[in-house]
Image (cartoon, rainbow, N blue to C red; front, side, top):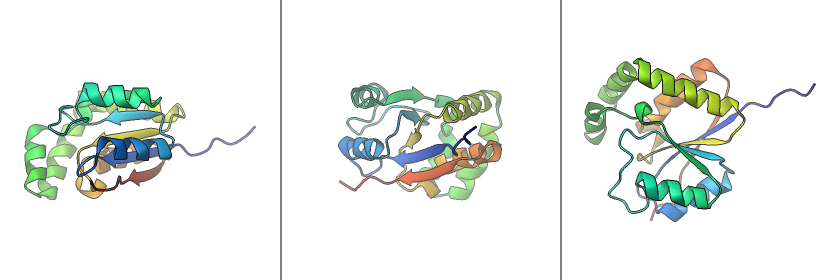
Length: 155
């Protein structure tokens, strides 16, 4: 029997990137499913609101899923805008322990274990300053996974 390979998980942020550049990164990485982990899947940036984004990736053969409860609560987003990573992390760690985020984390892990090439999407360009890094840490606590941060070119 052949050994299963370690699943691959990608992350991507669209800050300072055009929709086409984000899509190119996803296609280059052969992503099967984009998992939007924003609490609010709306954007002032054209092409990044939920409906537009879902349609764009669907046209490219990439499925779209919004796991809203894995998003950062309002007070965490406020800390992120202020550059207060410690407060963001503290708020997010408290949030992700709640039942709804835990259910969505379990759903995400199921998607990863299915063998699909998943990319987590949020706004922040730098994954180290984004709550995506916390989601990845929680996934890694529960399973082996290879993680690659996709960084689209600046516009």
